[in-house]
Length: 231
Image 1 (cartoon, helix red, strand yellow):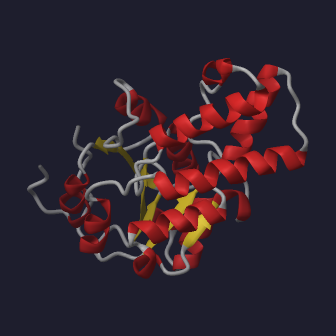
Image 2 (image 1 turned 90 degrees about the vertical axis):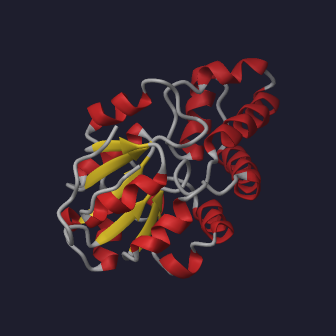
């Protein structure tokens, strides 16, 4: 499924999600989440209570599961679970094939924008090798405004890069992220190359406002540069 080509020079900055785009973390994160929360809540039925929570902040997910199970957690308990889950995910999530090479090839100013907490987010960026390219432009949505699907983090990233939002392009894999980008007035391409993507997800991203979807990151440069030849 090919997005429309952007006019050459139209895109002045790239804003990228992290989980499911830079690191192929979603399946591993789900496994770690289920195991950790099953132990914390004392029930193996946790997996069924994670439905509809994809793309949200880990703390939000933990609180939502606690509410669904009617087992309230203290703030300290929630934080301890979040730190444990994030630390394991940050060390185990593999780098997404092709993403780093393509982002370097594009040569555009780049910001990473995620709902993940700063320690996990920065560790994933560091392990991916993107650190020198993004510099300080790594933004954890809950710490620069309301988390996605609110537009705050993407608007903040555009301001910090010094470019108008409508000259940016967002790369996202989740409905939450696509909705955040569109709320910010930024066009977004859905990335469906992660191991967690299920049939029908591309259409869901399009329905949420993505201009198109790519399964292979090598499809991105021809679209951004306005040249033919996307595989």
